Length: 198
Image 1 (cartoon, helix red, strand yellow):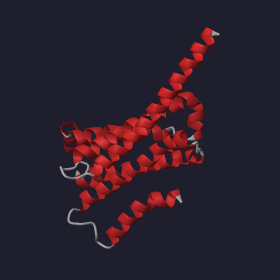
Image 2 (cartoon, one colour; image 1 turned 120 degrees about the vertical axis):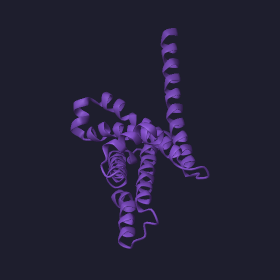
Image 3 (cartoon, one colour; image 1 turned 30 degrees about the vertical axis):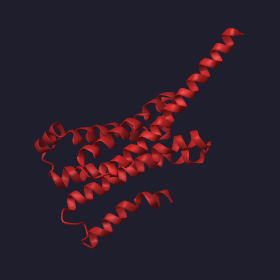
Image 4 (tube, one colour; image 1 turned 60 degrees about the vertical axis):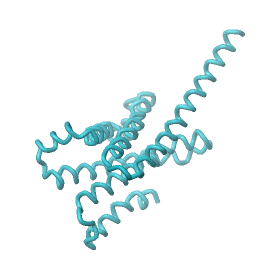
């Protein structure tokens, strides 16, 4: 089911390509749709741990790796369209855009940070890094989430509210993680104080 849902946006784009229904600016339309799919799957991926923290459900955690790889898949397509179709592999133009346009700068940084997460997504890499180091590395996904939302916010024109929806979702998800961290830290201090008094 996850495969079907996650491949839905790409399947729809391919159908629109076949029916010549990509709008007046096909490259921009495809780039936008792939970026939107990236952010949607990323938000779902980031929501798995907060769901566990709030409701005690754990079964969804087995989907985290697959969803993360789909995020990397879609963001790779997103940037591939920009590099190949929008700039025709013109390295000078690409570098100029990355340097001069902040939304491209943060987007590229997000892509770079996703690479080590994708590379270390296997069980073998988790064992090699060690569970603690692996978890610490994969917390970068929250940084990627912030960069992705900033990329979208800085890209769109005034009057487009979709990026603010993603920003609101991300703030809630980060808030839940911060709340849980603060609660655990408070419990740890309370326990330490009780042991000291005892």
